[in-house]
Length: 97
Image 1 (cartoon, rainbow, N blue to C red):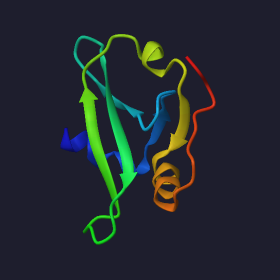
Image 2: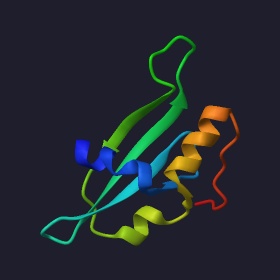
Image 3: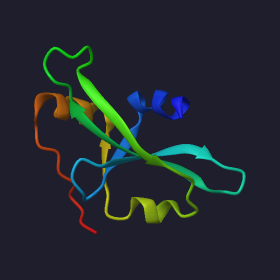
């Protein structure tokens, strides 16, 4: 899992239609052809916390169909997502499932 998280700063992620849930679809493809999506939430840390943003990995598991994972999502740069969450800007997906 650390290698997946380490790749986030330069990656694009996808906003799901549900609140506070994002998916990062890694470029890692397993031997059986499955891809590996990581669902996570991102929020601003409380005042006085050592970090400025907190990321919580909610789930990560292999799937066979990449298109099904991305259905109804909106693509956004991870860096832009972090900036918006930090500044308190509302982040909304364009698509609906």
